[in-house]
Structures are given as C-alpha cells and as structure tokens.
Image 1: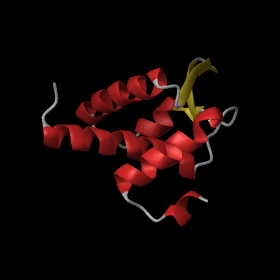
Image 2 (image 1 turned 90 degrees about the vertical axis):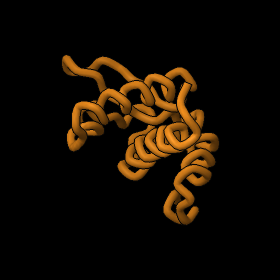
Image 3 (image 1 turned 135 degrees about the vertical axis):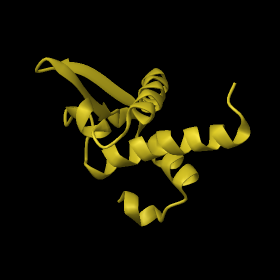
Length: 99
C-alpha cells in the first residue's frame, strides 16, 4: 500500500499522463506510440508510469492497441467527462486549458 504522500504523487503522475494525451488530442482513433509518452523519463519513472497506465486501462480511460509492431495509446472518448474531472481535480489547472 502506498503512503499518503506517495499516493498523491502517484495520482499526480496519472493526471499528468492523461493531460499530456489530452493536450495532444489523442482520443480514440488518434493514437500515438507509447514510447512518445515515456521518452523523456528515467527507468524508475517509466516503471511507475507503466503501472499507472495499466490502472488507467483498467478504468477504461485509456486504450492501448498494437500497431506497426509497437503499442499505441489514446484516451477513451467515451470517458471524456471522467478524464476531464480527474485532470482538473488532481492538477488543479484552469478549466479553460481543457477546451
């Protein structure tokens, strides 16, 4: 079980991953290689990020599909409201940034 501070950091990581996909417009059929999402991270961060992505996949907030020999990732357009609310709640950003 994660400690309170670690849990907050972990929720922050999930929100940042979602926000990055959101800003890039990666919804449904508009996907990007998973490596594009993780390319600036160190190995420890990549491991945590992959764990977070697995949880987001289980929530059906992101979709992962094999494409061109590698995994591609996009946001689930059927979960737009939940994704937006989570990003706003965790990152505490201006709602106009999600328009």
